[in-house]
Amino acid sequence: MPAGRSGKSTLSKHIVSKLAKSNIIGMDFYYDPVLIRCDFIRVKNELIVPLKEGKRATSKVYDWPNEQFLPGGWLEPSGIHIFEGWYSMEENLAGLFDYKIWVDCPPDVGMERGLKRDNHIYEDRWVNTWVPEMKKYIQIQNPHLKADMIINYKDIPRNI
Image 1 (cartoon, rainbow, N blue to C red):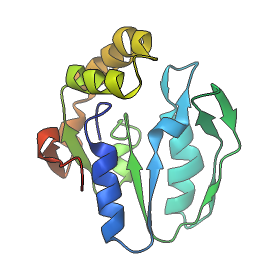
Image 2 (image 1 turned 45 degrees about the vertical axis):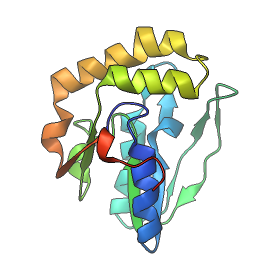
Image 3 (image 1 turned 135 degrees about the horizontal axis):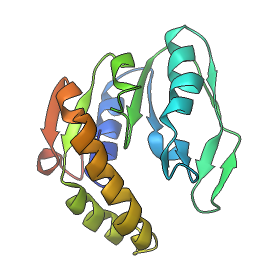
């Protein structure tokens, strides 16, 4: 799922509410400040691979307010795991998922919505890092072409 504030979390929560034994793994918790993006290699090695092998997965998570890593929890391989967030369709990850949904939202629209949500706290990061990186990711990797389903962000009700 794509750009920030596109409705992907709302959609993910709605899907989980309809499925037994399901949960959301937010890619924001796997942000790495050195990489200035999600550490998708860590997501793959610490979460996806063990889960696909039927093993318990454990991983540290990023604490945004305190800008530090915290011990994470664990995930059992049973159930449905929804990986939600930027870079979840990254080329090293996309082929590992059983079903992929792309929420189509222009990065600039996501930024406007994100700035409003965050009270402009991360404005410099949105403008100078996150949106340019997201645009580059979309241009180079064409993540929407990997999707099994594409949903326009305007079609996701805010209150589902």
